[in-house]
Length: 334
Image 1 (tube, rainbow, N blue to C red):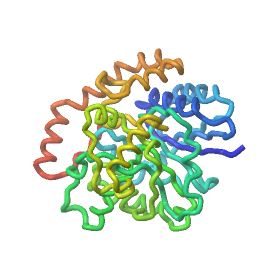
Image 2 (tube, rainbow, N blue to C red):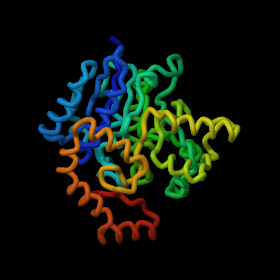
Image 3 (cartoon, rainbow, N blue to C red):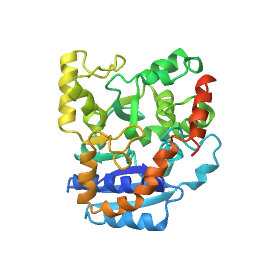
Protein backbone atom coordinates (compact mmCIF):
# COMPACT_ATOMS: atom_id res chain seq x y z
CA UNK A 1 0.00 0.00 0.00
CA UNK A 2 1.41 3.40 -1.02
CA UNK A 3 2.27 5.60 1.95
CA UNK A 4 1.39 9.30 2.24
CA UNK A 5 3.68 10.92 4.85
CA UNK A 6 2.75 14.24 6.43
CA UNK A 7 4.24 16.02 9.41
CA UNK A 8 3.00 18.63 11.86
CA UNK A 9 4.81 20.69 14.48
CA UNK A 10 3.08 22.31 17.44
CA UNK A 11 3.17 22.72 21.22
CA UNK A 12 0.72 21.64 23.94
CA UNK A 13 -1.42 24.75 23.40
CA UNK A 14 -2.45 23.36 20.00
CA UNK A 15 -3.22 19.80 21.11
CA UNK A 16 -7.01 20.04 20.64
CA UNK A 17 -6.72 21.82 17.26
CA UNK A 18 -4.24 19.13 16.22
CA UNK A 19 -6.75 16.44 17.17
CA UNK A 20 -9.39 18.14 15.02
CA UNK A 21 -6.94 18.45 12.13
CA UNK A 22 -5.93 14.78 12.37
CA UNK A 23 -9.50 13.56 12.58
CA UNK A 24 -10.70 15.67 9.65
CA UNK A 25 -7.70 14.62 7.53
CA UNK A 26 -8.20 10.90 8.17
CA UNK A 27 -11.97 11.10 7.82
CA UNK A 28 -11.41 12.04 4.16
CA UNK A 29 -8.44 9.74 3.57
CA UNK A 30 -8.60 7.38 0.61
CA UNK A 31 -8.60 3.70 1.67
CA UNK A 32 -6.01 2.73 -0.95
CA UNK A 33 -3.24 4.70 0.85
CA UNK A 34 -1.52 4.37 4.22
CA UNK A 35 -1.32 7.76 5.93
CA UNK A 36 1.75 8.19 8.14
CA UNK A 37 1.41 11.21 10.45
CA UNK A 38 4.44 12.61 12.25
CA UNK A 39 4.51 15.19 15.04
CA UNK A 40 7.74 17.14 15.59
CA UNK A 41 7.78 18.40 19.16
CA UNK A 42 9.94 19.31 22.12
CA UNK A 43 7.66 19.04 25.13
CA UNK A 44 4.33 17.37 24.40
CA UNK A 45 3.20 15.62 27.61
CA UNK A 46 2.63 11.89 27.53
CA UNK A 47 -1.11 12.22 28.15
CA UNK A 48 -1.51 14.41 25.04
CA UNK A 49 0.54 11.99 22.96
CA UNK A 50 -1.62 9.12 24.19
CA UNK A 51 -4.85 10.97 23.33
CA UNK A 52 -3.66 11.78 19.82
CA UNK A 53 -2.40 8.25 19.25
CA UNK A 54 -5.74 6.74 20.26
CA UNK A 55 -7.54 9.15 17.95
CA UNK A 56 -5.43 8.15 14.94
CA UNK A 57 -5.78 4.45 15.80
CA UNK A 58 -9.49 4.70 15.00
CA UNK A 59 -8.47 4.67 11.35
CA UNK A 60 -7.07 1.36 10.02
CA UNK A 61 -4.96 3.01 7.30
CA UNK A 62 -3.23 5.56 9.54
CA UNK A 63 -0.32 5.67 11.97
CA UNK A 64 1.06 8.40 14.21
CA UNK A 65 4.66 8.84 15.34
CA UNK A 66 6.21 11.52 17.58
CA UNK A 67 9.72 12.83 16.99
CA UNK A 68 11.47 14.80 19.72
CA UNK A 69 13.42 17.64 18.10
CA UNK A 70 14.67 19.24 21.32
CA UNK A 71 18.26 19.10 20.08
CA UNK A 72 17.52 21.91 17.66
CA UNK A 73 16.59 24.25 20.52
CA UNK A 74 20.28 24.94 21.03
CA UNK A 75 20.31 26.80 17.73
CA UNK A 76 20.73 30.50 18.38
CA UNK A 77 18.30 32.71 16.50
CA UNK A 78 15.30 30.39 16.61
CA UNK A 79 13.48 32.80 18.90
CA UNK A 80 10.31 32.08 20.79
CA UNK A 81 7.91 32.97 18.05
CA UNK A 82 6.42 36.16 16.68
CA UNK A 83 2.84 37.33 17.02
CA UNK A 84 0.72 34.14 17.21
CA UNK A 85 3.50 31.98 15.72
CA UNK A 86 5.37 29.63 18.05
CA UNK A 87 9.02 28.61 17.85
CA UNK A 88 7.92 25.22 16.47
CA UNK A 89 7.65 26.71 12.98
CA UNK A 90 11.45 26.41 12.76
CA UNK A 91 11.27 22.63 12.59
CA UNK A 92 9.73 22.75 9.13
CA UNK A 93 13.18 23.69 7.87
CA UNK A 94 14.89 20.48 9.03
CA UNK A 95 12.58 17.96 7.34
CA UNK A 96 15.22 16.81 4.85
CA UNK A 97 17.41 15.47 7.64
CA UNK A 98 14.62 14.15 9.84
CA UNK A 99 13.01 12.04 7.11
CA UNK A 100 15.82 10.36 5.13
CA UNK A 101 13.44 7.52 4.23
CA UNK A 102 11.31 9.81 2.04
CA UNK A 103 11.98 11.65 -1.21
CA UNK A 104 9.02 13.94 -0.54
CA UNK A 105 6.72 14.73 2.35
CA UNK A 106 3.71 16.92 3.10
CA UNK A 107 3.57 19.40 5.96
CA UNK A 108 0.54 21.13 7.48
CA UNK A 109 -0.32 23.54 10.25
CA UNK A 110 -2.96 22.37 12.72
CA UNK A 111 -5.22 25.46 12.78
CA UNK A 112 -7.11 23.85 9.93
CA UNK A 113 -9.98 21.56 8.98
CA UNK A 114 -9.61 19.17 6.08
CA UNK A 115 -12.68 18.71 3.91
CA UNK A 116 -11.07 16.61 1.20
CA UNK A 117 -8.33 14.06 0.62
CA UNK A 118 -4.72 15.29 0.67
CA UNK A 119 -3.31 12.33 -1.28
CA UNK A 120 -3.48 13.87 -4.80
CA UNK A 121 -1.21 16.74 -3.73
CA UNK A 122 1.53 14.29 -2.73
CA UNK A 123 1.93 13.07 -6.31
CA UNK A 124 2.00 16.45 -8.07
CA UNK A 125 4.99 17.59 -10.16
CA UNK A 126 6.52 14.09 -10.49
CA UNK A 127 9.15 15.14 -13.03
CA UNK A 128 9.84 18.71 -11.88
CA UNK A 129 13.01 19.87 -10.13
CA UNK A 130 11.85 22.06 -7.24
CA UNK A 131 12.38 22.44 -3.48
CA UNK A 132 8.85 22.89 -2.24
CA UNK A 133 5.33 23.62 -3.40
CA UNK A 134 2.41 25.43 -1.81
CA UNK A 135 -0.52 27.69 -2.53
CA UNK A 136 0.45 31.18 -3.57
CA UNK A 137 -1.05 34.46 -2.47
CA UNK A 138 -4.61 34.81 -3.72
CA UNK A 139 -6.18 38.02 -2.41
CA UNK A 140 -4.49 41.35 -1.84
CA UNK A 141 -3.87 41.59 1.88
CA UNK A 142 -1.55 44.53 2.29
CA UNK A 143 0.85 42.17 4.06
CA UNK A 144 3.92 43.74 2.44
CA UNK A 145 3.35 46.77 4.67
CA UNK A 146 4.71 44.64 7.51
CA UNK A 147 8.09 44.41 5.77
CA UNK A 148 10.75 47.05 6.21
CA UNK A 149 11.97 47.79 2.70
CA UNK A 150 15.34 48.90 4.05
CA UNK A 151 16.05 45.37 5.27
CA UNK A 152 15.58 43.58 1.93
CA UNK A 153 17.33 43.78 -1.42
CA UNK A 154 15.25 44.38 -4.58
CA UNK A 155 15.65 40.71 -5.48
CA UNK A 156 14.47 39.61 -2.04
CA UNK A 157 11.53 41.99 -2.19
CA UNK A 158 10.48 40.55 -5.53
CA UNK A 159 10.60 37.02 -4.13
CA UNK A 160 8.61 37.95 -1.02
CA UNK A 161 5.87 39.43 -3.19
CA UNK A 162 5.38 35.95 -4.67
CA UNK A 163 4.30 34.60 -1.25
CA UNK A 164 3.80 30.86 -0.85
CA UNK A 165 1.61 30.27 2.19
CA UNK A 166 3.35 27.96 4.67
CA UNK A 167 0.21 26.40 6.14
CA UNK A 168 0.33 23.45 3.73
CA UNK A 169 3.43 22.46 1.82
CA UNK A 170 4.89 19.68 -0.29
CA UNK A 171 8.63 19.32 0.31
CA UNK A 172 10.89 17.74 -2.32
CA UNK A 173 13.29 16.23 0.21
CA UNK A 174 15.44 14.52 -2.42
CA UNK A 175 16.24 17.85 -4.10
CA UNK A 176 16.82 19.54 -0.74
CA UNK A 177 19.32 16.88 0.35
CA UNK A 178 21.05 16.92 -3.03
CA UNK A 179 21.68 20.66 -2.82
CA UNK A 180 22.34 20.95 0.93
CA UNK A 181 19.27 23.13 1.41
CA UNK A 182 18.67 22.23 5.05
CA UNK A 183 21.95 23.82 6.12
CA UNK A 184 21.24 26.87 3.98
CA UNK A 185 17.72 27.26 5.35
CA UNK A 186 18.61 26.89 9.03
CA UNK A 187 21.63 29.18 8.80
CA UNK A 188 19.68 31.83 6.89
CA UNK A 189 16.77 31.61 9.35
CA UNK A 190 18.97 32.07 12.41
CA UNK A 191 20.94 34.96 10.91
CA UNK A 192 17.92 36.79 9.51
CA UNK A 193 15.13 35.99 11.97
CA UNK A 194 14.91 39.64 13.01
CA UNK A 195 13.92 40.62 9.46
CA UNK A 196 11.01 38.23 9.00
CA UNK A 197 7.38 39.02 9.86
CA UNK A 198 6.50 35.44 8.78
CA UNK A 199 9.68 33.63 9.79
CA UNK A 200 9.67 30.17 8.21
CA UNK A 201 7.55 31.28 5.24
CA UNK A 202 9.87 34.17 4.41
CA UNK A 203 12.97 32.05 4.90
CA UNK A 204 11.74 29.31 2.58
CA UNK A 205 10.84 31.76 -0.16
CA UNK A 206 14.08 33.76 0.01
CA UNK A 207 16.23 30.63 -0.02
CA UNK A 208 14.28 28.56 -2.55
CA UNK A 209 12.83 31.03 -5.05
CA UNK A 210 12.37 30.51 -7.99
CA UNK A 211 12.60 26.73 -7.49
CA UNK A 212 9.06 26.46 -6.13
CA UNK A 213 5.78 25.18 -7.50
CA UNK A 214 2.18 26.18 -6.90
CA UNK A 215 -0.38 23.77 -5.53
CA UNK A 216 -3.99 24.20 -6.64
CA UNK A 217 -5.84 26.85 -4.65
CA UNK A 218 -8.16 24.38 -2.91
CA UNK A 219 -5.32 23.02 -0.76
CA UNK A 220 -5.26 26.22 1.32
CA UNK A 221 -8.53 28.12 1.46
CA UNK A 222 -8.25 30.80 4.14
CA UNK A 223 -11.42 31.12 6.20
CA UNK A 224 -11.43 34.88 5.57
CA UNK A 225 -11.94 34.26 1.84
CA UNK A 226 -15.57 33.38 2.52
CA UNK A 227 -16.17 36.77 4.11
CA UNK A 228 -14.55 38.54 1.17
CA UNK A 229 -16.68 36.60 -1.30
CA UNK A 230 -19.90 37.28 0.62
CA UNK A 231 -19.13 41.00 0.71
CA UNK A 232 -18.14 41.13 -2.94
CA UNK A 233 -14.74 42.35 -1.76
CA UNK A 234 -12.57 40.04 -3.85
CA UNK A 235 -9.38 41.79 -4.99
CA UNK A 236 -6.71 39.48 -6.33
CA UNK A 237 -3.09 40.11 -5.42
CA UNK A 238 -1.41 41.84 -8.38
CA UNK A 239 1.91 40.02 -7.81
CA UNK A 240 0.32 36.55 -7.98
CA UNK A 241 1.47 35.62 -11.45
CA UNK A 242 0.54 31.97 -10.87
CA UNK A 243 -3.13 32.89 -11.28
CA UNK A 244 -4.77 33.18 -14.72
CA UNK A 245 -4.41 36.59 -16.36
CA UNK A 246 -8.14 36.86 -16.91
CA UNK A 247 -9.98 38.28 -13.90
CA UNK A 248 -13.01 36.21 -14.84
CA UNK A 249 -10.96 33.01 -14.84
CA UNK A 250 -9.39 33.98 -11.51
CA UNK A 251 -12.81 34.53 -10.00
CA UNK A 252 -14.10 31.21 -11.32
CA UNK A 253 -11.05 29.42 -9.86
CA UNK A 254 -11.60 31.21 -6.55
CA UNK A 255 -15.28 30.30 -6.30
CA UNK A 256 -14.56 26.67 -7.23
CA UNK A 257 -11.86 26.38 -4.55
CA UNK A 258 -14.19 27.81 -1.90
CA UNK A 259 -16.97 25.44 -2.91
CA UNK A 260 -14.75 22.33 -2.68
CA UNK A 261 -11.73 23.07 -0.46
CA UNK A 262 -9.33 20.35 0.61
CA UNK A 263 -8.25 22.42 3.59
CA UNK A 264 -9.78 25.43 5.34
CA UNK A 265 -7.09 27.38 7.18
CA UNK A 266 -8.01 29.62 10.12
CA UNK A 267 -5.54 32.44 9.63
CA UNK A 268 -4.60 35.10 12.17
CA UNK A 269 -4.71 35.06 15.99
CA UNK A 270 -8.48 34.52 16.25
CA UNK A 271 -9.27 30.81 16.05
CA UNK A 272 -12.51 28.82 16.33
CA UNK A 273 -11.44 27.47 19.72
CA UNK A 274 -10.84 30.92 21.27
CA UNK A 275 -13.26 33.29 19.55
CA UNK A 276 -16.87 33.54 18.42
CA UNK A 277 -15.97 35.91 15.59
CA UNK A 278 -14.29 33.52 13.20
CA UNK A 279 -15.57 32.82 9.67
CA UNK A 280 -16.39 29.13 9.01
CA UNK A 281 -15.99 28.20 12.68
CA UNK A 282 -19.00 25.90 12.22
CA UNK A 283 -16.82 23.52 10.19
CA UNK A 284 -14.31 23.23 13.04
CA UNK A 285 -16.96 22.65 15.69
CA UNK A 286 -18.79 20.08 13.59
CA UNK A 287 -15.57 18.10 13.34
CA UNK A 288 -14.85 18.62 17.06
CA UNK A 289 -18.22 17.11 17.98
CA UNK A 290 -18.00 14.26 15.48
CA UNK A 291 -14.58 13.28 16.81
CA UNK A 292 -15.85 13.27 20.39
CA UNK A 293 -13.47 16.03 21.45
CA UNK A 294 -15.93 18.56 22.88
CA UNK A 295 -15.22 17.70 26.54
CA UNK A 296 -11.47 18.08 25.99
CA UNK A 297 -11.99 21.47 24.35
CA UNK A 298 -14.21 22.64 27.22
CA UNK A 299 -11.52 21.70 29.74
CA UNK A 300 -8.96 23.66 27.74
CA UNK A 301 -11.21 26.64 27.04
CA UNK A 302 -10.17 28.72 30.11
CA UNK A 303 -6.51 28.36 29.09
CA UNK A 304 -7.33 29.38 25.51
CA UNK A 305 -9.16 32.47 26.73
CA UNK A 306 -6.32 33.44 29.10
CA UNK A 307 -3.80 32.97 26.32
CA UNK A 308 -5.83 35.10 23.93
CA UNK A 309 -6.39 37.87 26.49
CA UNK A 310 -2.67 37.85 27.20
CA UNK A 311 -2.13 39.24 23.72
CA UNK A 312 -3.68 42.50 24.89
CA UNK A 313 -1.68 43.10 28.07
CA UNK A 314 -0.25 46.55 28.74
CA UNK A 315 3.29 45.20 28.56
CA UNK A 316 2.72 43.73 25.12
CA UNK A 317 0.94 46.88 23.92
CA UNK A 318 3.86 49.08 24.99
CA UNK A 319 6.41 46.70 23.50
CA UNK A 320 4.64 46.62 20.15
CA UNK A 321 4.22 50.40 20.14
CA UNK A 322 7.93 50.88 20.86
CA UNK A 323 8.90 48.53 18.02
CA UNK A 324 6.64 50.38 15.59
CA UNK A 325 8.12 53.74 16.57
CA UNK A 326 11.68 52.47 16.26
CA UNK A 327 10.99 50.43 13.11
CA UNK A 328 12.04 47.21 14.78
CA UNK A 329 10.29 43.83 14.32
CA UNK A 330 8.24 42.72 17.29
CA UNK A 331 9.08 39.28 18.67
CA UNK A 332 6.39 37.63 20.75
CA UNK A 333 8.31 35.78 23.47
CA UNK A 334 5.24 34.73 25.38
